Length: 142
Image (cartoon, rainbow, N blue to C red; front, side, top):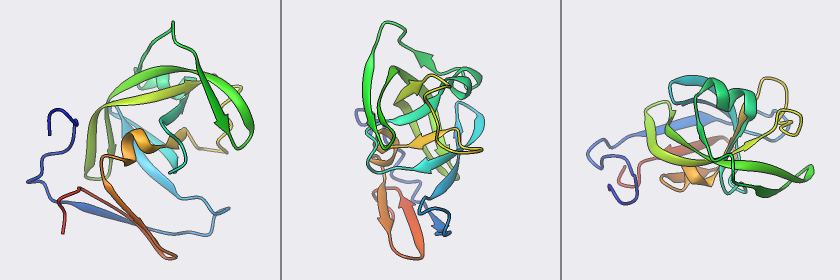
């Protein structure tokens, strides 16, 4: 648990999000370091990706010396590596999550969207997707 920075296996929980036909994306409410935001679930994104303004508001630790080349749906862009102390989606929480931070002019996720909820968060959980819903649960949830 400690090595993988996973949730306590005794807190068996799952969250279900109904699919909404909004441009074929799943928007999820998430809390990063105590700051509420809206994220697009992106199983193709290696990292949770934040726009710079949200990262600053959430006090995400950014490695200013890092450079990260990201291949996005809108082309290749650059960002910086960082870490969020906690990311929470409803009752599901992960600690010390690696993130990528994009400059505000490059981070065009859509109106009202603060970033992408990528695999640096999602891989810590079991994710099931069907035509009606997305289910995210702790790995030990039944």
